[in-house]
Image (cartoon, rainbow, N blue to C red; front, top):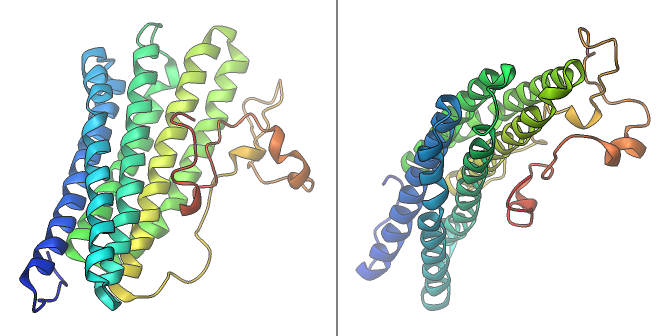
Amino acid sequence: MQGQQEHIVKSFDDQLKNVAHQIARMGGMAESQFSSAVDALARRDSDLAGRVVNADTGLDGLEQQVEEETVRILALRQPVATDLREIIAAFKIASDTERIGDYAVNVAKRTLALNQLPPAQPASAVPRMAKLVQAIVKDTFDAYVERDAEKALDVWHRDAEVDEMYTSLFRELLTYMMEDPRAITPCTHLLFVAKNIERIGDHATNIAETIHYLVTGEYIEGGRPKGDTSSYAVVEHGQEGEAGDGSPPPNAGANAGSSASPDAGSGTGSDAGNGPKDV
């Protein structure tokens, strides 16, 4: 683990290293759960999806351990400067990582439902989006282990690409549902799958912001780049072939609440623990 200073009290070093190790372990588990959920979706593998659902308690337990350890360190060691950032970052990253696991479980649950239906034509588009998010999640936890602020910043910028892909997929699924009512049930499940994957990207971006602050002591300047315009997407009957650019209408503020998008939140750090378990 790079970037950690040695302290006079060796037990303090051991506690900090243990917390960092637990975070890295959580990251590996979250990556594995998400990868398995995507594989289960692509291969229509109900057994694998079931294993993802059952494995969720492991991440929950690790998050609780990290929370207990960070609170204990704050109370007994009263850390300052870099050490304080280390503890606060671990607390926040553990929460976001646990949510990544929750959304991976949601994908697996939707897969179990989809496997009871005939294969849906647009199902292949979702794994393409998932592959991009998988790379972002991996790079995020690599940045934590390496204490690499530049890599974390790169992850932060790539979130907009995920949002744009989600908006495109959202409009595509709406089109399929309008063309064939029999596609409504599978496409609705796929909409929720896509939203869960997009939210995993949001939580990875939250972690990247925290890593940047941990390493540099500074917050990333400027607003987070966003490309999700699905809340304003409208596909009218007879215009399925040209769905438009998804730009917000002039009265977007008045209409945003009536969207058909399965929104689970804004994607900012403040909602990480407040949303429902499924979008």
